[in-house]
Image (cartoon, rainbow, N blue to C red; front, side, top):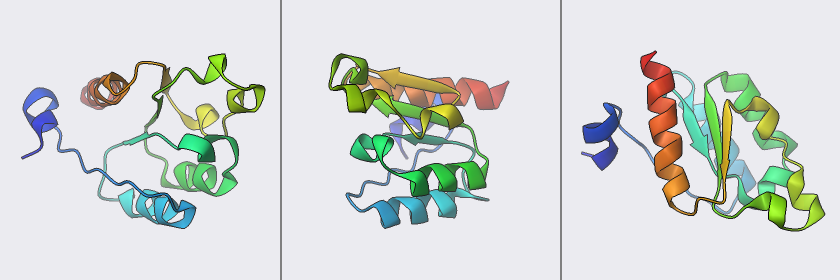
Length: 111
């Protein structure tokens, strides 16, 4: 049992890929099986209309996570195709950002 089920009441499935199409497939597969999505789109944040379109299409609550503070990095990293679709963006909290995102999403789903 994933540890987050004990703390949030929700199971957490993890998908990691360096391939945009696989991420789009995973997002689309979440429709009907997931209550929400926590996503770190990494460099696809700034380039992927496909990921943004998939998130829009599944119409699930989304929390966007970035390990680093993208606003303290290069200018091009300050634009996100995902942020307008997200209920929250967590940036610069390192790996703890994932925990914050899962807890926030769980709180949202419970209310």
